[in-house]
Length: 125
Image (cartoon, rainbow, N blue to C red; front, side, top):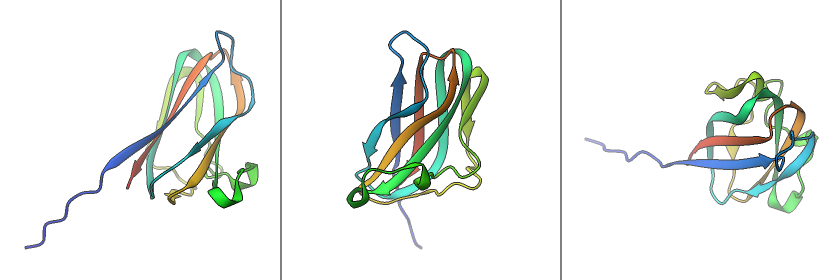
């Protein structure tokens, strides 16, 4: 009999806060990831009804900073259209692997109305 412990599930969470105003386009910041794993899902949660398209970039720490050429989303960028939430558990065309010490960058491609956005990546280590 072989018993395998399941690997832990972690979340990488990034918040874009417009400070009471609608969030704007552009690069919003970075997170260095301290573990390796596979991205299982991406969730967006908005404080109010609106629209947003997010791109996530990834590069090794030694190649910081990541740019739009390092997008992990391919042609399937996370997006909310006239709503408050989004979840994708398939991640078609995504680069799903994260290596220890990779840096993720979060870029807003387009946005309207939303003043606070939470971006959550569920990762299996």
